[in-house]
Structure formats: structure tokens, C-alpha cells
Image (cartoon, rainbow, N blue to C red; front, side):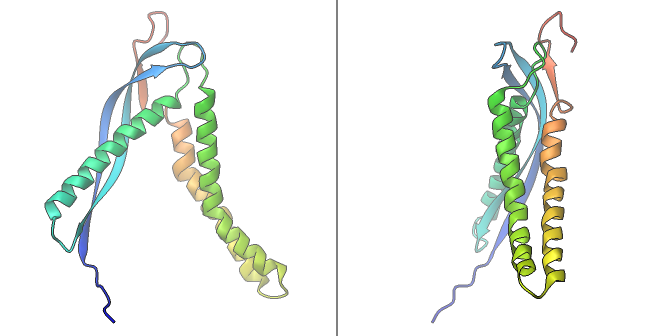
Length: 167
């Protein structure tokens, strides 16, 4: 029986850029441009070391694409400078993704812990797994969910949206 052995290199890149993205408020139909600073991460693979240069370029391209996508997603979360409201669909999709992230990170640990707590043995291990699930959900919230929601305005500025509005 032959066992394939994989060899290769993985390239990783990050890109931070300033983007000018169109903003359209779904509530009051206000439109303007927004300058957004966004960061993206990307990777590229060179199987069997055959295309190291191409993999490195792929990593940079993927990081630039992720950065631009992050900028577009950030603009969707911004509150309108005129009516001060956020779009309902953006709020719904953000909450849905955030809840799914938290569930998928914490549920396996919590369910595993509950399995051990339901039996007559290994209660300490069950409580440990529940605690790991709660701590992992908290870590995802602090590193991923909270910054996207609360720091979207800090990474962006409206480009002269209206002469009567403060910028």
C-alpha cells in the first residue's frame, strides 16, 4: 500500500488599506462616500514546492481581496449620519453570524461537559468542559464580534456627507 506524503509551503500575507466605499442608508435613502481603513488576511499554497512565487502572490491577492471585503462589510454596519440608524438587514445578518460563531465555538465543549455531568462519574471534567466552552465563547466575542460592531465607526469617516452635518 502506498502512502502519499504531502510536502509544500503555505504562504500567509496581511493587507491593510484605505478604501472609498459608497454608503446608502436603507432607512432615509441618504447616500455618500465613506473612507474605511480595513485589514485582510490571505494565504496561498505551493504543493510540492512547485510554485512558491505563485503561492506568495496568491496570498497577497487573497489578503487584498479580504481587506476590500472587510471594508464593504464595515460600511454596512455604520449608522447613517443623517437619521442615526443602522440598516435592519445589516443588523440581522451581523447578529446571526455572531450567534452562529459563538454557538459553533462553545457548543461542542458544553455538550461534551453535559454528557459527563449527566453520568455518575467525572463531574470535575464535565464542569471543566462547560467552563472551556464559556471561556471560548467569551474569547470569540472579545476578539471578533465586539470590535466589528463597536469599532466600525472608529475605522471610517464620512466624506462630506452633507454641509449641515458634523463630520
